[in-house]
Image (cartoon, rainbow, N blue to C red; front, side, top):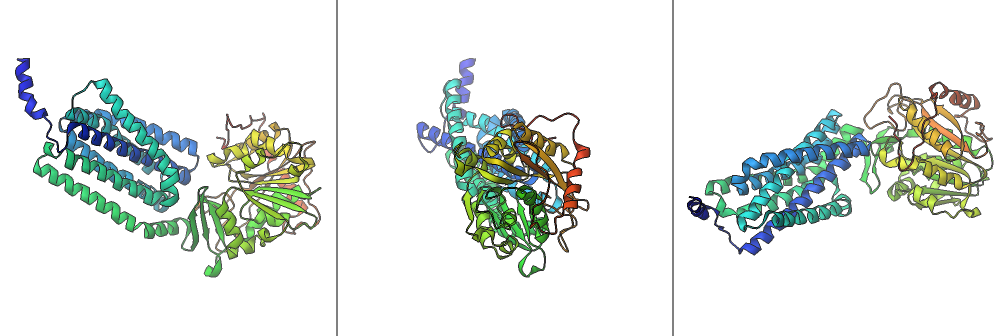
Length: 544
């Protein structure tokens, strides 16, 4: 009875392949390699875009990876029902994955631009991609066994080896090839095209004998339609990006660039009649000439004392640098900025140059493109040339997870080491209202590095006509804040908490009464118990 059953099944299982079994098996494993690479690119695209759109990259990565892994398990279970038609099912899965994964970036950015909320779309895309990716392995395992029976352990080893190597290539291709040369939108579309071509070619050529003529026709039409949709989306990507940016930033975008460090967007200025605005990763950094007040509040209290040698960390827009250069007895300023493109814009963009007073043209300024943490770490302890009277930390907003190391105890320890005797450290600590715990965590972190602090908050004033009421640095793009939060600062020194005072020559827009008021503003929010500091191994910024 058993022998009879095997004889009846033999014709159905007999391979009808256009190439020898060994070559067919190699081609299937090559398809595994390509599909794994594409799948990891989709995953990284989601994580990168979610971190930019929503912020808090740790949370976004955790949510996306958790949802995708769960969805992959669901996809594996669903694939059990499709193994009887493994070839057709695999082609359908790859067609759907190419469509969903390829369009995912466009869909997410569209939701963010026009609906102001991307989280539901992020979770939905992650789940859909996870289900389709999870269905791949069981179907591919069936196809490998369809070509030539072998022990399950050997087949699984071969399959996962190809899968893991493909994931390695996809993981490296995303940051080093796709992101710098294609960008997120076009990179996702190109990945979808490769995915659809690999899946369709594998089934429609190698396993065409397993499909009826009608099934082949339907799969061919589906693949062509998906490729046409992706090609059309690629052709429309330019107008789409411009329209989405207008929806987010308004209709006067002058510069929009994605650098290896961040997205830079400049709006207004020039002949638009609107104040110049600079957004870094979607957060407002500069809002016309009114932003000078925030730079003045950061710099001038720190300049009350010796200030021959000054170090500016961050602040690539040049506004803090301009305030430092107001003092004629400043002999040398080192400006360390991680983004070379932002430095270039600060030197060459006419409206931004006008705002920063052409600060980078001053012969006293030495601009360095480097990560501030790594640059401080490279200073030689005990070398007088590596110490500064004033250090100004005008860094990325602390609400961004990737900036957590620049608000760590280790970072402030390096900064304290670079202070000359009697030197002061000025820290821009983001916004205050709604983020008081983050501010006091930064304060605790600076104190844990051996410094004494004087906290102060500067109330926001409107940025002027057309700038949006109360829009201050740190606001998200597209957000209009009628009651914007105060800007938060810390002034720190080694021996004792520095006195908050203004040196001669401070602009009249920042007055001693305003500084005294700023010193009292944070006191009601000081926690009863000191908060734990943020470290590299225990990051607590942004604090919840």
